[in-house]
Amino acid sequence: MRESRFNCAHALRKDSLIKFVCCVPKELRGRLLDFPRLYAYPTEPEPAGDYVILDSGAFELSMRGRQIDEAHMAKMNEHYKKFGASNDKPVIGVAPDVFPNPADTMKNWKIWHANHYLPVAPVIQFTTMKKIDLYAVMKQVKFYGVHPFVFISNPGLRGAEAWSRNFQHAVNLVRENMKPNWIHILGAGWDRQDIMDWRRIDGVDSIDTIAYYTAAREGFAWSGVAADDWKVTAINNAVMARGLLSQKRAKN
Image (tube, rainbow, N blue to C red; front, side, top):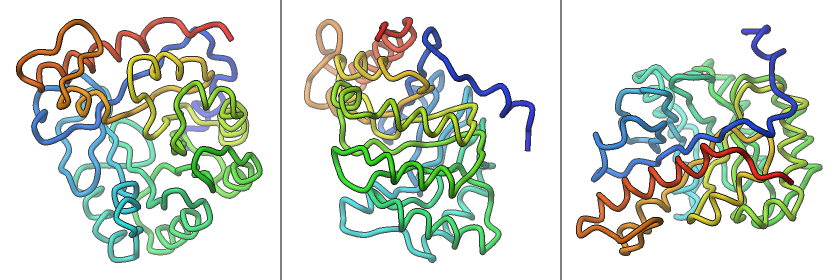
């Protein structure tokens, strides 16, 4: 259980850096290997490098009005097993969550473990888009207990909104009660300014986004002029995001 590492979980991280995790589309495979990366099920990941996140695919399912069922879980477990996923680095498996539904996510957690599937990292969900329900967060942290790696699912907030709507308190509850070595925000950082704004949230270790490449596809560069090849612009956007997050956090 790596008890000694849990005891070292940082309470204050004002000068720590945030990692930029690239969600990888098929066109950029092989071109982002020096970044931490996220691959949504059933996409096969590339070599881990720093670390790799295997996502459950819950968000994409939610966009189609569906959610993870037991058949999906069984396939996820085999996928995770094939690529060496666990509940910690270097290959982290995201729990079978339901976006945005804490109750169904916890129900899936019980089903997953009742089937003796691989260890996975829990996901803290919120009940309503754009709102931070601290009671729901507290209920979840008590349910999951101590874990080395914890995901928090962004309920559609930009960084400035997260700062003004108690997201910091949610992160504090997770860190104080679940004692993680790492907290990752799923789906955060939608443009250059937004990435800078997320730096205000203390205790966050990494964020991921598809915006670096969706912006590039639309011809938008986060620094300088867009290249003729959108894939080049996407890589440049990712490098820019990594650079922004590697700076010291803004003082609150």
